[in-house]
Amino acid sequence: MAMAKKRLRPRPHPSSKQSKQSLKSSPEPLPAPLPSPSFIVDTILPSQQLHIIGGPAHAGKTSLSFRMMGDWQSQLNVFGYKSNPVPFCYVSCVSSIESCREVANRMGIRNLNMISAVDEGGVKNFDDVYSLAAREVPNVQVIFLDGILRIAESSGLDNKVVGDFLSQLLRKLKEYKVTLIATGRCAKPKESRSTIRSIDRFLGATAWTEFASTFIAIEPSRPNKPKDDLRIVTVMPKNSPAFTLNYRFTQEGQLVEVPEDFASNSPDRIQLIAEMLSGAWEPGDEITTAEILDLGQAIGILARASMMRYIQVLVHRGELLDAGHGKYRVPAIQ
Image 1 (cartoon, one colour):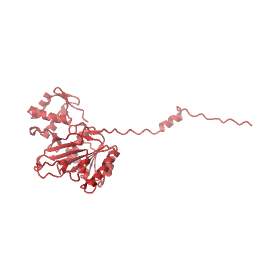
Image 2: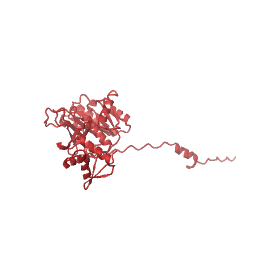
Image 3: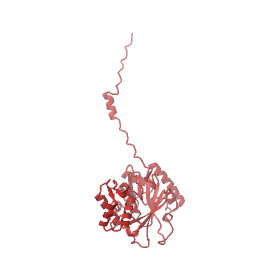
Image 4: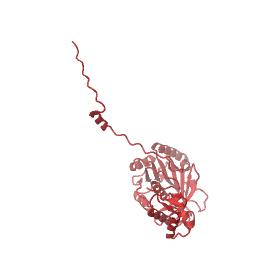
């Protein structure tokens, strides 16, 4: 008996309705991870490294951290170098979130991602810090940490223990693809003219500064005169020359860079000039030197040399761009 031939069902063509439905139901590809720049601040702050802000008590370490964050997220220069902002979070190991917000308001900075480890019950190690930051900013790439000694092994004094802790920390930064900028205490100099560098007075083992890629020191100009608000900021990268800058506090408590010259280092005036420039001109507009000098005379800065020093600081901060031939340009700032 002849066997009946088995009828084969044709396979659906990729253009068929069934195929189209299956293509529609397939999951969408995950978004590509955000690119990480080699430097979060060109030349001085390489990515996925540890950077330390050190200074004696009440020198302004927290204020300097907020100054850096505010300028960095606005794409202004940080210490004169180009910023490369990426998602970041501020984590305080020493203050409540209310205190953090007060500092941000005093510094005139808005929309910062902040979290208090104090309010969260404290942290014991960097994994705890990263977990808090990643909860606040899931794609975090930079963490500003106030109080790195709070997560140090033992008391932070034993060189071997601290060295092991920092070796593990650097591996974690590579693993998580995160840059850490952390504050820590320096011992107060015994006299105002002490020749001992702040980097050599950082509290704890020498491993702290040996493992840090860049050490940023902030110190009162005259430690024995608390009313003197002038601060000397020294930036010491491992792979480029160190340099110093002058900062002062405005009447509102904002820490701002000022010219070195004593006759023209008013923080309130330089802030007023910056506000007047941004209010009178649009991003991309060109301004002549004569126009800026007229602006200075309107607020009582009569000496050309003094006004030019203020202009130099604004260019250094990135709030003005030198367009050449006696002209400046207003940058596009976020």
